[in-house]
Image 1 (cartoon, rainbow, N blue to C red):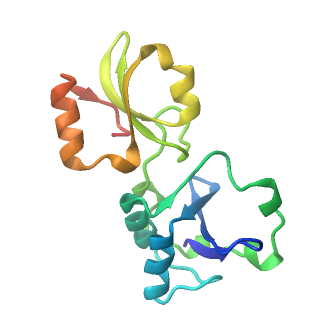
Image 2 (image 1 turned 90 degrees about the horizontal axis):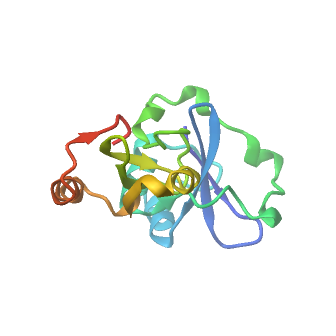
Length: 163
């Protein structure tokens, strides 16, 4: 289950959770912090993955870059206590990069190469495929309506399993 933590040197919060065997840090916006506090979730407490997914969908929880700043990597032992094994909600709820399964910096992209289709790619995979990409939208901005319109406007008929 996701675990809420507070940065030692900043008045900000983050969440650790496990997705496909990797521990992922989600940063929280001030609205995300407020929503967790109003739900009675405080640092050190676990909460349902569904709530983290709601925060992710609203843009109030996000991954950025490759983790925390070096000054933040000094953690207290209690910050490394996880309760992931008891998580009843599937980690497959979270979108991942179609190529490398990273949850970081995801975009909905139009791939134009040997095939024309929609996919979800992380920053590194977008860079390695930049010659075959035509459109790229940050995933936090994509709704079902935007996805439908994107597919229609770009005349995309196929999408891979990540979309």
